[in-house]
Amino acid sequence: MKIAVVGTGYVGLVAGVCFADVGHHVICVDRDEKKIAMLREGRVPIYEPGLEDLMVTARGRIEFSTDLAAAVRACDVVFVAVGTPEMPDGSADMGPTLAVVDAIVASAGSSRKFIVLKSTVPVGTAAFMRQRLAGTPHEIVSNPEFLKEGAAIDDFLRPDRVVIGCATAEAQAIMGELYEPFVKNGHPILFMDNASAEMTKYAANAFLSVKISFINELALLADRLGADINAVRKGFTSDSRINPAFFYPGVGFGGSCFPKDVKALVHTGRSVGVAMDVVQAADEVNDRQKLVLFDRMVEHFGDVRGKTIAIWGLAFKPRTDDVREAPALYLIEKLVASGARVLAYDPVAHETARAASSVPFEITSTAMAACAGADALAIVTEWNEFRTPDLGQLRVALKTPVIFDGRNVLDPVKTVRAGFTYYCIGRNSVARGLA
Ligand code: NAD
Image (spheres, rainbow, N blue to C red):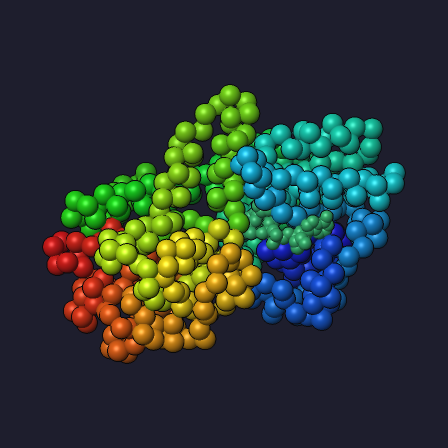
């Protein structure tokens, strides 16, 4: 099948490349000329493991263009994967999506197009579009995306499920054919109405956010009461009704999805008179959690003014260069505003972090270099290379042996035995030899 994908960001590019990988012909469109020029040269503008290799495999079935009109004329199915960022009132900014849908309609003439909304859009968007498109032959399909950055290729090629919201058997047949190669593993394509498909995406992200904030809050309590959150987690998730996956305490969730999607869901609820109190609480708890390491530093040092803090990890999670809403940037901002100096290291996210940060900080080329002469180390992203540092070398590098482990990647007992003052999340009693 020949399809167009508009927006070559983390979602659109992965989707386009994966569709091409299974044999479809894909035109990836973006208005960013620099990005398209890079892609045409075979270079990938984002860090996503496996993406560059797959682009090579898909060569011949994928093209990159800034010409939306030509892509629309050439394809009957057009995916829209542009950003839906947060507005000041918490709602999703639908400007880019609306602009693209209007441009598709303007270019399509009288030929029938299936316009597939892959962006995360508020519940009711498809219904609104359908009204806007009344009198045209086009059909609006909702196909929210569930991939995780850092594992995006695998998630797209082998999805847990594909969700399709549509109103006709024709759309159902086309989408079924498109996705059939991805569900050989027996996982389902779930067909439903558009509003339910749109809501499914928000439900998933909101629920995952609630899980994270719930365990983060419990971890703070565990620290205060002398319990070990790891033991507690194992204990309560052994209940067959409670899935242990994605249930680890840390420094809060970030990224381009959870923070804005929980806010958008709260906004949607408010607009129809339904209070989304649980989701709102998850968001508020997360705002506090992003600064939990800063609070610990202030407790430890009294004042961080004049201190040098090494930060390991800038990306909002490992295996991506995405720093949107990254907890590390919140921490750095707070430290710098409080008079601290920051030396940071991330295996891939240095450039994106520098571009996104509103405050100056230094970036080093190795993890150990960030620690040279620092008063403390804070681990903010759980990249694999941070899991087994040479503690002897680290002890020598740091001016004072203090570690704030925001992802619980180090062994509390070993770290304390190696001579460090060690703070972690919900496991401080283990570090103090109490649990
Ligand atoms: P992104 O910011 O990485 O990419 C968006 C792309 O759209 C950019 O390349 C931009 O240049 C392009 N664009 C914007 N307006 C355009 C226009 N008028 N014409 C052509 N191109 C245009 O965004 P993303 O992270 O890929 O997210 C896209 C959507 O997918 C969002 O709604 C997001 O919530 C959702 N989503 C994201 C993820 C994720 O992990 N990033 C996962 C699932 C769903």
